[in-house]
Length: 204
Image (cartoon, rainbow, N blue to C red):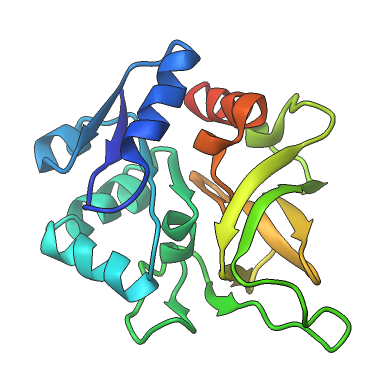
C-alpha cells in the first residue's frame, strides 16, 4: 500500500492522479493507523521549511514517520519540500528538520556571472545521473523534470545513488540513502519522466 502523507501542504491530488495513470492505487491520509500499514510512503511538500515542520507537528506525525522510515525502513520518497525536510536544518528558517539525512537545506547563491538567474528556479531542467540507483532506472533519454524551488539540499555524506542539476551551479536534485529517497523536482508535474520515476519507486 502506497500512502501519500497529508500534513496540509503539497500536491496530494496531483501525485495520486499520476500514480493512478501508471496503475497504482494509493491513499492520501494523515491517520496514524493508515500510515502504520503503509508499505511505501510519499511525503510531498510546497512552501517554507519551518511551516512544513510545524504542520508535521500539528498533525502529530513525527513519531509514526520516524518509526516507518528509521525503524521499519520502508521506502520513503520526499518530494521538493519533503526532500528538504529530511535534512537537519534549513537556511530558510530556524526549525530543526527530521534529521534523517546528514546535511542542510541552503538557498541558491549565485556568483556575478549567474546573478541574473531568477529565484525560484521555475520550469523544466535536466538531471545528470552521477551514481545509478533503482529510482533512476530506464528513464527516458532527455531526463528532464519540472522544478519550482528557491532552496536545495546540501548533504555531508555521499548518497547511495544521486543525480545533479545545473542552475547557476550544480546541485543535488535526487538522492538515495538506503530506504530514503528525495527528489527536488516534481515528478507529478513531469509527464513521462515523472511517471517512470514514480513507477520505479512503487516497484522497489
